[in-house]
Image (tube, one colour):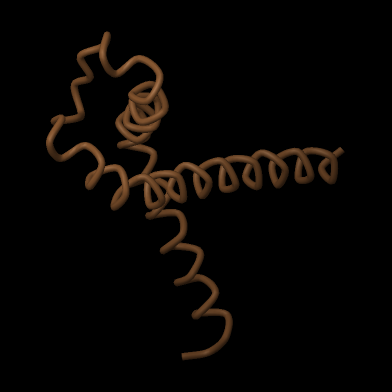
Length: 92
C-alpha cells in the first residue's frame, strides 16, 4: 500500500469516527452535564443517565473517554471549518 492510499484510509477512518461520535454527541454532553451537576445538585436532581450505586464507578470509567470524544469532535469541526474557509479564500 502506498503512502497516499494510507493517508486516504486514515482520513476515511477519522471522518467515520467523527460521524459516529457526532451521532451520540447529545448523550455525551448530557453525561458530562450530569457529571458536573451531581456534585453540586445531586440531592435535588434526578438524572436520567446515572444510577446512584454505580455513579462513581461509571463516572471514573467513562468520563475521560467521553471528554476525549467531545474534544475530538470540537477539534475536527474546527479544522473542517478552517479548511473550508481557506479553500473559499483560495477560490477567490
